[in-house]
Every structure is written in structure tokens, then in C-alpha cells.
Amino acid sequence: MIVCKFGGTSVANAEQIKKVANIVKSNPERKIVAVSAPGKRFGDDIKVTDLLIELADAALTNGDVSGKLQVVVDRFKEITEELGIDDSICDVIEKDLQERVALDKTNEFLFIDNIKASGEDNNAKLIAEYFNAIGLRAKYVSPKDKLILNDYPERTIALPEAYENLKDLGKGDEVIVFPGFFGYTREGILRTFDRGGSDITGSILAAAVKADLYENFTDVDCVFSANPKVVSNPVGISEITYREMRELSYSGFTVFHDEALMPVYKLGIPVTVKNTNNPSAPGTKIVPTRALTGRPVTGISADSGFSILYVSKYLMNREIGFGRKLLQIIEEENISYEHTPSGLDDISVVIRSKQITDEAEDRIVKRVKEELHADDVYFRHGLSLIVIVGEGMRNNTGLAARATSAISRTGANIEMINQGSSEVSLVFGVLQQTENQILRALYDEFFAPITVG
Ligand SMILES: Nc1ncnc2c1ncn2[C@@H]1O[C@H](COP(=O)(O)OP(=O)(O)O)[C@@H](O)[C@H]1O
Ligand SMILES: N[C@@H](CC(=O)OP(=O)(O)O)C(=O)O
Image (cartoon, rainbow, N blue to C red; front, side, top):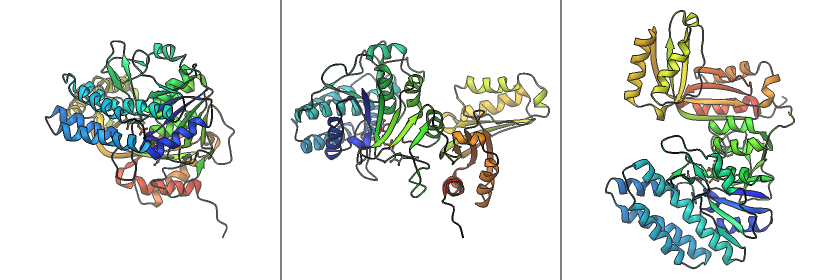
């Protein structure tokens, strides 16, 4: 059995949904289809999820609820009309949105989740209806009582019972259309995953039914070795390991959500990233292991929005428990960290900036000074991480030197370097404004064709 996930761009309008139906029809193994909310139809279009967030904000601040609600309904109306299906589904969608907007707003976070999830939920209903209208027997299945999640405010994850509840999905005659991005707690409270989280739903479904393959359909022919929006015509990747993909997707390869790897990884289910607009292209296969080719680097990713906490103290290396106490202060602010490169007398903690408020920053600096008696403590913001990833890097000496000289040729400064102990990644912290320039320089260093001249 194959589980497929169709991203927002693949279900953005009627034309795209018709392509989805053709893809599903062309292989009877495609029994489970996870769908996102309608995404961007063109460059500066707005995703339905973003329209829904605006609607939720308006509902919380007594803004223009009816106008914003209508914009969402109109998106679905347009799709319904162009697909030529019964437009009564639009009344269902409108009523559903009105009910959600009227929900309890005591917990704003959960209220917003409820509104956001309607994009996927209503799109799944609409797509199931379209499949049936064209003779592809299909059934919408709600995540309610099936995709069980942990409780708010923990970071959203599926509980083990979700896999048990979903294990028989797809065993009947119909194609299952399942909304991505959300599930429910044991008490029936709706929660969403992080943005881009329909990839996670697809992976959970693939693991639950022990699928032979998880196909992730998007709008590019494959995963490229660098973001195609920054590097022109990057090399495509035909095969990549889970570990490489995890490193790259956490740090900028938005094409596949990093949390979506875990459920399939545990069972060794292969994943392919394919293009809805060009389904015959082979795509990228994500696999447990792969033969190492000549090229040591598989991909280079870049992501902005990082901060670094620098701490220095003379003889830090002799002080038992210094690192633990420092990380505990960060933990007590409910902040997670990405990397902790260190020297003899200094340590840096790399954190996603969106987690740090001004107040938390002041408290951390004060506590590190007073409780750990550090000589120097400060935060730097506005940083990007550039991550060079490749299974082949382990056996390749001189790679770090090549990377640092390529960066230095751009004139940019390196704020932090970290090599993961798995040795499949090399991380550079740089100033945000130098990110694209460095990414292109590193791409040229490791991927540009060698010209003899
Ligand atoms: N290394 C990469 N390879 C392919 N696509 C990438 C890469 N890095 C970023 N992207 C972007 O990811 C986009 C696809 O992801 P996303 O927008 O989430 O699609 P979907 O709507 O299918 O979920 C591509 O259009 C591309 O711009
Ligand atoms: N619609 C949600 C979930 C998702 O996965 O969307 P997409 O497939 O468009 O990345 C979002 O925008 O975050």
C-alpha cells in the first residue's frame, strides 16, 4: 500500500486537484491520501492557512470576522465551481467556519489551532466528494478518536495509540482522504502540528498501516542540493538518507518537514518526494542507507532566525557541572537549544530566536552572571545557520577547510562553527544578511562543475 501526501500547492485550485485525482487513479496501491489546505496558486498568493490565521486573529481582537470568513469560503467556492461538484459542500464549509469562530476563546492558542485546522479538514471533505464525483470511490476520514495527540502545551506529537487506531485504514475498497496537520487529544481537544505539519500526518499514516512507500507530492521535481529560490539550477538529489534529510530539513529544506521523518524512519519505510505537476519524474528517494557516490556533500541548507548566547569564564573546563547548570537555566525558561559548541573557557548556546522574549533574555543573562559567576555573558541575534550535509563527509579530510575558505572569500565573518558528532554535518553560524551570499559560495565550492581551462 502507498500513502500519499499532497501539499498545499498540489491542492491549491481545481486544476491541481484534478492532477491529484489522476495520480491517485493511476496506481491502485495509492489507498490513503493525506491533504493540506489549499496553498499558493501563484507567487504572492496567500495560503488558506494564513487566511485562517488572520480570521482567528480577527475573532480574538473583534476585527473584521465576516469579511475574512468570506474570503476563505470564496476560495473553496471557486474550487467547487471549477471542479463542477455540488456546491452544497460550500454551505457545509461556511457553517463549519461559523461554528469554529464561535468556539470558546479562553485558550487563544487552541482556538487558533481549531480555525487553522479547518483548511485541511474542509479540503479533505471537498476532495473526497470530487473523487466520488469522477468515479474514484473515496471516503473522508476524520482524525477524531484516531490520530490521538498529547496534551497542550507540550509540543504536539502523536501518542502510540494513534498508530494502533489507524492501522486498518485503507483496507476497504475506497481511497481514504485524510486531512493533514491536526489531530485530537484523548479528551477530544483539537491541536495542530507546526506549520508544514501535513507531512507529519502522512508519515504517521504510513507508519500506522506499515505502508510500502510514503509519497510526498509537492511542486518541485525533487529535493535539490540547495534551495532553488537562492541557488539557480541546483543539482537534484536522487537518493538521500533519513539522517541527511533530517539535518537538511531542520535547517531550511522546507520541502519536507523534519519531524515527518521519525514515524517512517522507525519502520524503515521509504519516502519519495515527487512533483504533482510532473509525476513521471522519479523524484527523491529518502532511504535508511545509500551507496556513497563520489561527492562528499549531499546538500547545503540555510535558515535564519537564530540567536547565540555566549558565556565565558576562566577555567570553565575545571568546573564540574557548569554546562548542566547553564542548560538548566535555559530549560527553566522553557527554551530548547540547537547546538552548544564550546572551548576551554567558553560555551555558546544556539537558540531559535522566536523562543526568546526580551524579559527571558534579561533573566538568563542575570542568572548566568549571578549564579554561575561568568566573566562575560551576552546574546547575539540576527543569525543564520548554514549546514553542509553528507554521509560522505565522514571519510573526507579537508572539507571544513574548503568550506571556511569559500566563506572567507565572500568577506563574511563566521560567528560559530559546529561539527555534529555523527560527522554528517558541518554547521556555520553567520550574520543573517550574509546568508544567501555564503550559501551560493558554498554551493559553487562543492557542486559547481569542474572546468578545465
Ligand atoms: N532543497 C530544496 N529542494 C526542493 N525544494 C526546496 C528546497 N528548499 C526549499 N524548497 C522549497 O520547498 C517548496 C516545496 O515545499 P512547500 O512549499 O512546503 O510545498 P507544499 O505546498 O507541497 O507543501 C519548493 O517549492 C521550494 O521552493
Ligand atoms: N496548511 C498547513 C500545513 C501544511 O503542511 O501545509 P503545506 O503542505 O502547504 O506546507 C500550513 O500551511 O502550515
